[in-house]
Length: 68
Image (cartoon, rainbow, N blue to C red):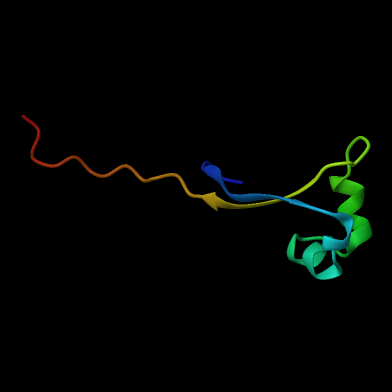
């Protein structure tokens, strides 16, 4: 990934029934099992759906006026 930042849109607590094949595919996984292989840490008691997006770095604007 190029320079830039990740901006969090939302963090929502969810349960195992909320982890559907559609959610797994939307998240870039082949299915629920692939998602859980990557996402599950520790006991897995707390599950959060974190939605985010990439923010490109701002380009520098040319300076106004003529050099002195």
